[in-house]
Image 1: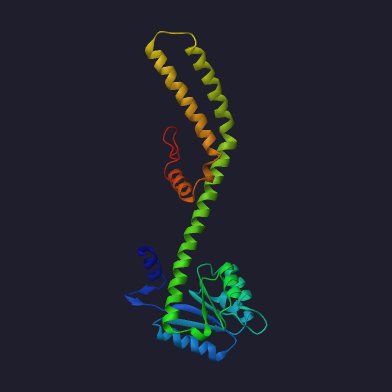
Image 2: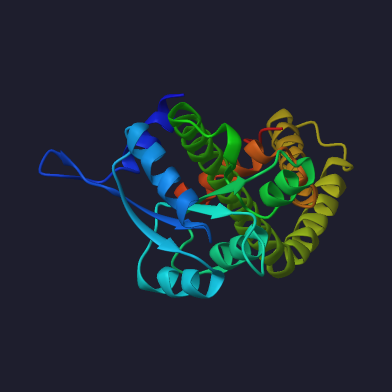
Length: 253
């Protein structure tokens, strides 16, 4: 996955040809576990500047001080859980791009599911942690964050498109329908005169087709947001690049 590789590389800052350290936060109330995780991260080849927190209050202060690239959250804190800590990380205005990894002492399916649903990027089982597992977990977390970012962008584009469609429908569609209805009546009335002028007849037929296409376009506006996300994104990008991108007669279904 080439784009994922580029994103993963960009996570490690580079200055003057030298790889700089990632900023990591380890939240765990057990000193031995914190030291072990730091040691395994070094063995995994990660260059980290590590801050530590033994509880959520300390973690909050650390989160306020700087942005973190990686945050390891122990599930079993003294009076709270890793899910409580995760909620603080996810909602923190400075930590939107931080990759959170839950560290649990047991392979609890419910805990893992809750953590992933709450915004955790991946998880590690304490008894199974190794340098290789840490590398795989971080790689998986980065790829998952890239995917979630793409989905979030997709949703943002669809919401932007929804606003455009709704504003257009409210402001322009009723008047356009009235104009097209009046024009269509005049065209059909002219065709009903029985004129033998083939050029006039052809022009009237073309005008009638155009009126019908405008009506179809206005009807399509009501269903465009129900199309697959990729189609909606393509339409939104087309509108952003060319406000006249959705031309009558050039719609793609």
